[in-house]
Amino acid sequence: MKKILPLATILLALSACTSTSGTGKNIDPFEPINRPIYKFNEVTDRFLLRPLGQGYNAILPATARRGVGNFYDNLTYPVTIVSGLFQGKFAQAGSDTMRFLLNSTFGVLGFMDIATRGGLERHDEDFGQTFAKWGIPQGPYIVIPLLGPSTVRDGIGIFANVQVNPLVQMSNTSVRDKLLILWYIESRAALIGPDEIIQDAFDPYLFVRDAYLQNRQFLINDSQTPTNEFFEEDFEDDF
Image 1 (cartoon, rainbow, N blue to C red):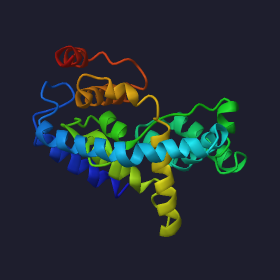
Image 2 (tube, rainbow, N blue to C red):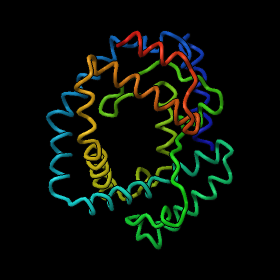
Image 3 (cartoon, rainbow, N blue to C red):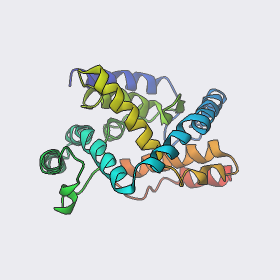
Image 4 (cartoon, one colour):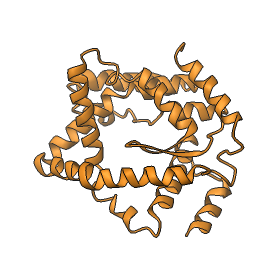
């Protein structure tokens, strides 16, 4: 709590210094900076990350990849639990805690997702969504080197996520760094195939930006279709 509330205060100050928000037209005032960073990420992905992901998929069978994905989903799940608590979703947080405990024990450190089979739904919460629930404006769209699309609000939310992520907070730095590298590769490997849609877009940068903002609004609304007409108008303008 002592670490997260100062982040929210900083976020409020940053948002107050800008005239942009999720409902404003000028959501991307940093586009001249964002595009070169996006290009850097794209080149890095094309020549390093995507080949690593392809190699990962080629080496590990589907069952093993699913188990590794389950392991990381479970290991980082406290972010969802704590974020849910900060949003006042106490019943959901209780269910998520039970899910985490079941998968961590009977699911063998989460490699087997027995909680889902038992009817405990998996949720997707983070501090970017929490800040949105608190009424903090999203601020301008930004692109973070190697991490990709974000907003000012979500970017600061990443730092809050780190504070409650057991993987990042591991004291054994050697084990932590190896697990983080594998997590990054596994996450990229999971996108092999769907990522080809981006390259087919007329302007991949705009496609990624609008898709990201649409998805974040979807999550903030708890998987309810957003009614904000801005996104529809923005898509029409871009394409």
